[in-house]
Image 1 (cartoon, helix red, strand yellow):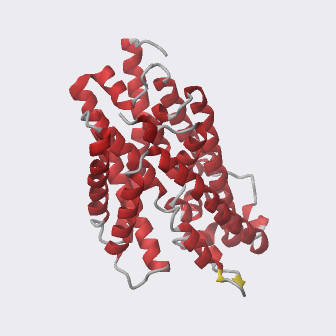
Image 2 (cartoon, helix red, strand yellow):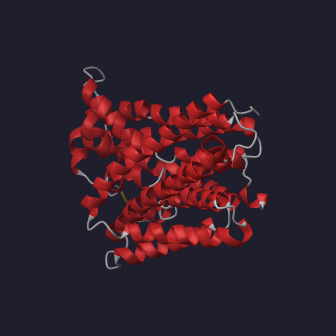
Image 3 (tube, helix red, strand yellow):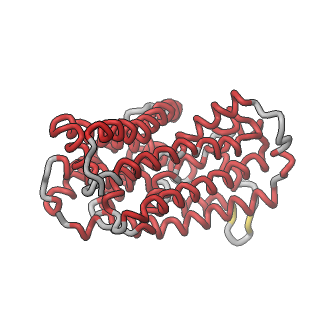
Length: 364
């Protein structure tokens, strides 16, 4: 196996996890959170982070038990060749289905706000081809790309924060008391879906050069994502209020239409131009993990077959992205995908931990 293409630093792991989590979802995050939690939507963002936090802790606790923490080897060791292979392939299929939804949402946004006369299928194709090319270069290149795109994301977030301070009102966040517990819990569950991407750690754990740094890097990544989501949701609430924001499909983009710059025109154009590379990061990151897992599962020569596997997975993502007939169907599928995220990110490490406790593997 060509280890050099699939070795990353703990710093790159931070950017990969953040990149897997923060993309198209945060554009509609204020609406989704406010629909259930009202003006306490910001609190739902914090509570929702408990789910990915648990997933990270369980995953690290599991893989720390093995000298060879490669997810495929762990699966085979715990479940045997046949069942272990099936478990890995289920993960690969999950990635293909979930990321097809991400690609479709990205394409819909691009067509609505930037390329209104371009067919959605062509935008999806262009995105998928670029993702496949990046994935074919391996984890190290993916890590570097995520680091570069992270700094672009910071620029976008600063634009959102600046507008919310200038045009919003903190009164829209009040009162802080009188919490609707039922709505808050429902909103927190919706917010948990927005943290999808933490499951990338199942595969990337074994790629990190210094294993003792994985937990710290993962928690930092989750903290960064939590901060970004908090800023975005608070910005939406401050500008539109918890009632008004529920009637806006893409609150973040609408928020950026408010100010006008004589030099740049409407700021959402600048935002979207910077966002183009950000929207497909989850597909790129999880596509890499799925391709790597598939190659390892079938014990293929990674130098010869990895790029072809990446192309096959990209083709599957593209075809599935075309199946929903409209954006409403995409949103419905996204909700179901949220449930599968919780099942994979929490279910896999919990099940593996249970089996490993029974079989007592040799610790590292």
